[in-house]
Every structure is written in structure tokens, then in C-alpha cells.
Image 1 (tube, rainbow over the protein chains, first blue to last red):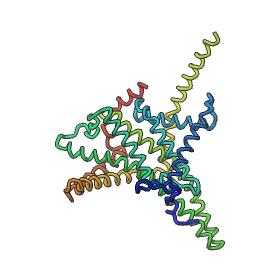
Image 2: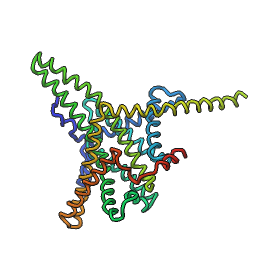
Image 3: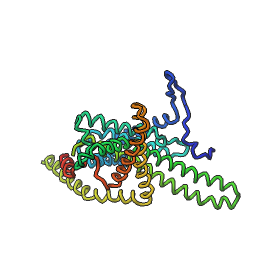
Length: 249
Length: 118
């Protein structure tokens, strides 16, 4: 068993594919992304296929997820925001299921790689930009000019606002990735203490109870983080989409 | 006649349910918030604010570096955009802490009318 806390994030090629000198290999990361999509899709499909008027336990989980995202989106972006419901719901389910899959021992955590979370964030910001410009044209740029700013300061403020806007996908992706990475490393380090302490005979085994208790507590915390980060990702997506829908006050 | 009455009854019951749910909803969301600010609150906030700040600086520096590369104005683009990035980072932090108005400074009644329009 590898005790290196970083080892769990290593990407290994399952099926090497190379097209035109570029590496398109099917990696363990791709495998778990596929598993995430299939898992989330299958869960939602199977639990809602019975369509009971009185939902069972599993069906009510699906319905709660729907209600949760729908009310979040409606609160943040108004009823017009509901056209983005499929996007927000897919993102939420993907991040949530990927985070939860990462909690299974020996599983790979897709969202602990910044390129994955950055791609998701770029998708959100790309949607905001494309929809904003398509719907509002150049009036979308009003987003960068706050009200009541002295004319002399407008160029400076606009530059800062533009940089601030561009930093959104970065902070969105860094937050999710850093939470998952830090959580999994902490978990692994504390779990590693258990094995290395128990090598010191009876006293070590007695001492190993402490990191074991910590590992158990951290596992609970990590489940909370998994939900919280998926929620935060979805909330911020809703807020950014609101900017695309209502750029000018 | 029984057929007539049934939908009415269902309608009334659904309305009752909706008002009951509406009465419970704010309490539920407050509970969520309390859970967020509990044991996890400090850690989550620290990560959130630092990621906002770092993202601003990184994007500013990256933008400046890119402009330098394209326009050959090294090192002025990097210097100026790094400073702008600091500004944007501070703005991000203040914004996510709720001390500065959001992008575009929406008026609150606009959002409300949208919500009621549904």
C-alpha cells in the first residue's frame, strides 16, 4: 500500500491513444469521469422512472436535488435563469458525484485536478460571455462600469473590473480543486499515521487510536466538503449567469 | 358532481401545502447557513477569500505577461497589470465578503419583480 499522500492523484494511462502527435489516452481520470456521468445519469434515470405521485426514498432524493437547484437558480437569476437549469444541474450533479466517488477508498478523485475544475469553470464563464454578448450586444460591457464613478477614474475602474471578472473562473476552479486536494491529502496523512504508529508494538497501537479517530472525523468532514463545494460551485454559477441575464442594472 | 369536487379539493390541498412549505422554507435556508458557518466556517472562508485574492493577482500577472509578449512592452505590461491584479484581488475579496456591491450593482426591486413574474 502506497503511503505517499500524493500518489492517489497520479494519472495512469489505461488505453494509450495518440492522434496526430497529441496524447488522447484514456486515463484513470477519464474512466472516473465516465463513471461519474454514468452513475449520476443512471441514478437520476432509474430513481425517476417509476414516476410515483408519492415518491419513494430514492425518487425523493432526485426530486430534492431538482428542487434545490431550481430554487437556487430562481433566487439568484430570476425566472429567466431557468433556461440555464440543465447546465447548472448537470454541473452540480457532476461535481457532487465526482466528489462523492472520490470518497470511496482506492477511487480516483476527478475534481482534485485543477485542469478538470478549470475546464468546468471556463464552460461557465464561456456561457456567461457568449450569452451576454448574444443577448445584450455591447450593452453587456456595462457590467464593467459601476454606477457613480467619477469620469477620471472610469478607465482604471474598468481595467480592475475586467481583471476581476477574468479572475472568476480561476477562483472558482481553484476553490473546488484546493478543497478536494487538501482534504484528501490530510485524510491520507492521518491514515498513514495509523499504519506507521502501529509498527511500534503495543504502545504504538494504543497511540494509533488518536489518528484513527481523527481519520474517522475527517471522513465525515470530507463528505460535508464534497456537498458544500458542489453547492458553492452551483451557487457561483447561478450568480455569474445572473450577470449574463441582467448586465445593466 | 363528485368529479367536479375532486379537483377543487386537490387544488385547495395543494395551495395549503404550498403555503405550509413557503412558511417553512426560510427556516430551512437559515439552517443551511448555520451549518455552513459552524465547524467548517473558518476553514471554508479562509480558502474562499484566499482563492479570490490569489486569482486576481494571477490573472493580472498573466494578462500583463501576455500583453508584454504580444506587444513587446516588457516589463511595463507585467508591472501595471500586476498592480491592477492586486486591485482586482482586493475587490474580489471585499465582494465575496459582501462589503462591496456586486457586478453591475443590481437594484433589489428588479430581482424581486423577476421572481414574482414566475
